[in-house]
Image (tube, rainbow, N blue to C red; front, side, top):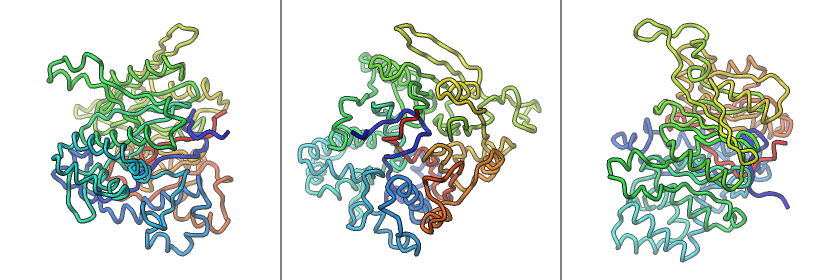
Length: 479
């Protein structure tokens, strides 16, 4: 029987994932609430949808479910009327490979018991009145799913805030071999999306076979006894951008602005206790908005190729290629990372420390993935000041791999693209590639060593790249 859910790497061929298209809630982010809702800026929703994200979806479908899209995009009509991209519409592309979270949510809401429970849970979290809670029961499943995500009815009545970060489905959970680790967000703005995700994974029939393999992060049993001012500093939080399944027996967990040490340790212990894997590397990065998660600092492109931010790598030995000077006129040093690897073998726990990020990534490629080729590092901004930091901010290090050596990134990171070209990669805009697919000039199967670039004027304002905008459920085995 073909596996429905499995992932033992970041780079094997992608076969199923969960996405969420930009919804109307993104168009309701206002300047006064943008940072509370974890946005740096307000976005133009129609541009984000029609000229950027829709192309991302077409690309995913061409690689994962090509029958849904072949022959439909030559004349641009599919991009113009957009019925193809609208969940709930008769012409929606509905795929069992490229799964829309909103559709999954609407499908569990057809069950009266689940609908009743979820309405009660959301109403409690959002402090809705009892009458509002009763009114929610009158909505059909499709419309209620939209309300629970956007906070607003079709008539414009607003019940609670939107959850604009749901576009970043990576933070809902991550497949670790045949187990699903659900995340526990650090910020209040993401509480509702985490709640909705739990209901989907525990109640949708699609995930029946996965249900006994779902792992949740919980607060320590003594947490409620702590004083309130201490509780906030002891939260056990974990977000998907800080979790990477880099090899069949090896998981990375970042400790960051969004993932706490306590959350990382709990996840590691639960995975060890269940025998899911034997090696976990904890990577502590500066708790700064600039970095947010480890997948904003590095991602893997193929077994022996990684893209990363130079100033958080071996830059303590070289401060970029040229000159970086701090305010005192001294050469800047890299900000500290702490990297500790824990492994369980024959009941014995071993700890290994890495001095820098490159050494860790080399060990993954060489030791875990048995790669015989030289390991290559492609640095954000081609490691040139000030482009490294500028392009990392617009997700130069946050790429989604569709198959080994073929990944999706943003079109605005020119210096990083140049670095990829220097290492033998082709750079091709997504629309050009889709047309080449339609004309039979290229095929997903034959594409190699290619970075596909998405238009990103609006997507990049949301502070997340293609890696963030994906929750892989199934990849081919890496071996």
